[in-house]
Length: 300
Image (cartoon, rainbow, N blue to C red; front, side, top):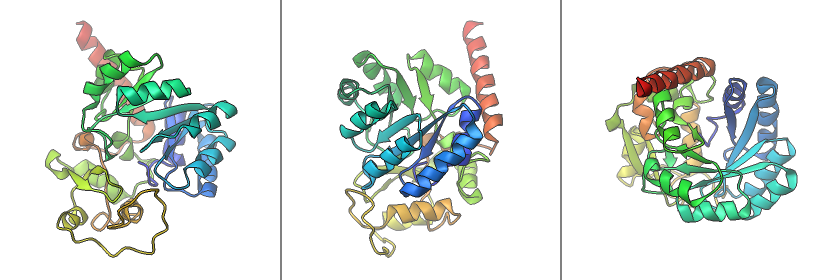
């Protein structure tokens, strides 16, 4: 979701439908992020809009401060840990929610003033900061902190939501299921990759950022698995740390724009359970219905 998948159309629609709409800011420049926030607000009305920026991006400070200046309600930060962002958010009265992968980091986040934490497990898509499943991590982190804990990774249906909430989570974060919606800024070819994917298609791959990544297998994945890396364009040093075997930002943008053979299609382990491309409003109604059905089955 981090590179031009979750932009204002998706974030605005989710917020309008009663969720928290998140703009992925890591693949944007400062002006683009400000424009996306304004556009999302126009759609969301009184809904809640947040911005996710990876600590690993070199322009982390500039992007976070632009989001705060433009009135973001929440800042989410993962792919690293920044102490400074807590001070920036506190000064501006903006909620700060870091992504964590251990009880130790969750306790540290609470100490610095986090409003909540997102527990992202190994089931998630994109770069993976832990080899432990979310449902394994969740009880430990709920026990370790006194702030709301949000579960992320492998959540696709309303029944999944109920299961995570029943474990004590205050909410869930969903990426893959919303990547394949009408309002997602992914290309139609990208969305269709999700719809067509089987469990065997979803693989781990080597990322130049030094972390494993989860993606849908395609000719690009097969190529880099052989060590045959595409020619890298002039490096913009957009990430603080990068092995530079290839430009991951360019590959992600390529897929987002429609070239799903030469580009990189990040996806969570749950993408194989995505079978259609609904509107956000349709999906939100479905999730509520599925949750209610799961609740009725649990009390029957």
